[in-house]
Length: 295
Picture 1 (spheres, rainbow, N blue to C red):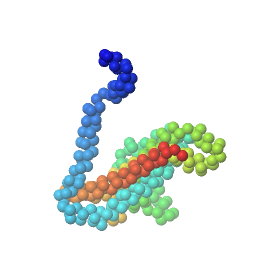
Picture 2: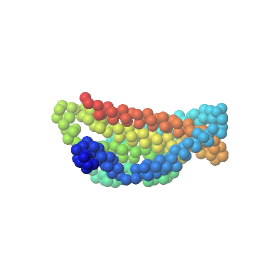
Picture 3: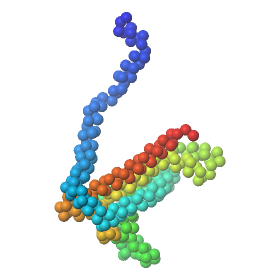
Picture 4: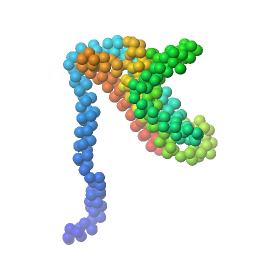
């Protein structure tokens, strides 16, 4: 029996060979993978690895002495706490903004939609100066808040939260908006026709569909808030133990040529951010498996 006859007589082998040929539809897999690994290594992995390596110069005792200093610990709590609160506020109101932009038509809608991206393009220092002038005790909003409610915004942790809300809003809106656009209203109408009220429709139809994207926007806003410097340093006041953020402490160490100390503080920030983002990604994976599970 010839080879051609054998191949025709074995359709499984022929289809297997066909699948093998089609496995390489996109050429250059090895080259592109190698380039990807090299690119990520040069820009992400190697720079991040240098942080713990640089902090090793302090020794174990020196490392813990720096990262557990009361002033540094207070900055950790402030940076992560304000970023968490700002991301939570953005997750709630960002969802509302995305819903309005997708489901309603009104005058100036395109202008509002374009303004959502303004924090992306605006230099963070400009945003910080503008917010500080606006919420200072003699500012347009700071003066009435102080006079009517005795509420001080600028140079307090509240001012940091407002600055982080400002720079984090686009992450939530732009993460949720495409999912809402793809969510057909007929699904909500079907739920209503089956007897579901508005609350049940939102809870059992809309939220499960947009929750992964909402969680992604929350994670992005949180990550941006933890490392934000330019828009925060002006409105924070930078008072030790009160309104001093961790990035400012890192910069202060660098200005003093204490590179090992700055690397130690940055290493703790990196580890804490990685753990929190890992938890959020785990929640996203769990939500995805829960949605695919048959009921």
